[in-house]
Image (cartoon, rainbow, N blue to C red; front, side, top):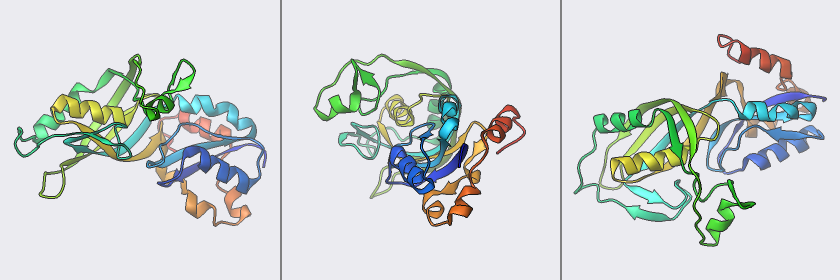
Length: 249
């Protein structure tokens, strides 16, 4: 195999880098790279480029992304997601009851161009060192906020407060490169006055490349080599689909 692009549906529990290494080894290619990291707990479309197609990785990385996620209201964590330590718990029962209108108003506030401060548990570098390494040592530094864009933020479902769990919000978001969905959830929680963290995340689109066209990693590894090669897409076909918004890949 010379060049090409593979659309993998990354499962939960594996890093994006390990997903690429696994596929690279199976296909026995010299070069491979992905076009946008998904955290280990996140799932969804991961675009993997092979050999000379790796020159396109930065191009794909700059494209808008769409996600479906779930946030838990009333609890904050140091990582802003389910993997972190709880730093705050709000008494939702005694506080003002949040309704659908409150949440939709909050969503409207975070539409368009917004400023985000990258979380300490991230790969953003400070003086040459990734923030997560500093965070693991208990160090916190001031990080400059970055401008990102939220093109769409839709409320899909609300699970109300119950005796054994905090309320959850399932949402869909389309955003620009560099947007941290867990930070978006954290900031919405702060806006609502109760805190929030991201508990589920699935990337469903990269520009107009849909998750429907990807193959689950666990299914891909079980195919014969001939069947696997049938899933490799020529780079020109992918680029053609991106140039025509009515042509969904």
